[in-house]
Image 1 (cartoon, one colour):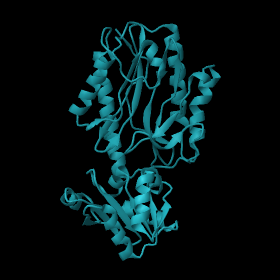
Image 2 (cartoon, rainbow, N blue to C red):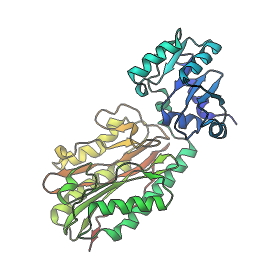
Image 3 (cartoon, rainbow, N blue to C red):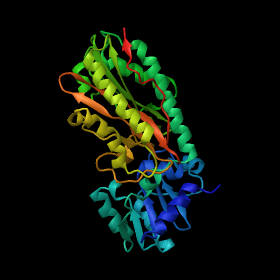
Image 4 (cartoon, helix red, strand yellow):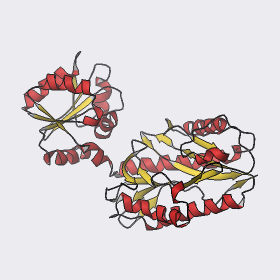
Length: 357
């Protein structure tokens, strides 16, 4: 069965000066080959696709890397790749410069001579921005798992519980439901700590009349989900209600108006302009969203500098927030996929202001 992703990659390579591409980034390797092991590289040209690995993984690679010839390397992988380049007559090799240390580059430069090393300019990452149907199905499952987790954790949010105990329950539940792990360090931030956008769970005890921001995701079948909900333990004050309503309005406006053809900067403005209009612009210091997929943060970005044009198949978060030092903060986040006419929301947890007795 033809590898459609490799076919798309070959079209991209044809638009460069390179004769072949060496893929060393583990996530890019997985994306192109399906290989889930920890050691190996893919070498791809206009008519050849080889996966190079050591003896530990040759059998696994043969099962997973369909459409690739499997080559076992000896003590030096570079020597094996150099032999292939010479055999293919490849004089210009694209390498993943963001994945290669300077020391590794020097070794490649020496080993692959006379082939010239060229920067790949994120050629695989650009392909990864647009998800295929298989990826979208997994991302939906990961989002569903996150939704089930939010519903589960509400019963544990009580005065006296520690942030860390809540995070532990979130992570245990996700794993019990099939997740490999969490997508990132789970954020549970209560009271004044909810003003920390990345307030990873601490030993703080949750009190009454406090915001609790929960930001977590399931790492499932190699893909990430990412959801944030903010609740109040106890009764919400007028201030709680005010800033929650603003964030909810901003997020909903973005969900209603985000569509293909916008740049990431234009997508960011959908939420930022509303929060700024209410006088809280200086308290919204991060971007409106980011791409998710094999990584929890990948392109495209919904931010002040986001220049990528959004197209169908891209999956991004929409997560505006307001963070008031000394009081607390609110963030509401959903995962969405760009469609021909707008978006489809993957996460479905309730977004009304929940007050937990």
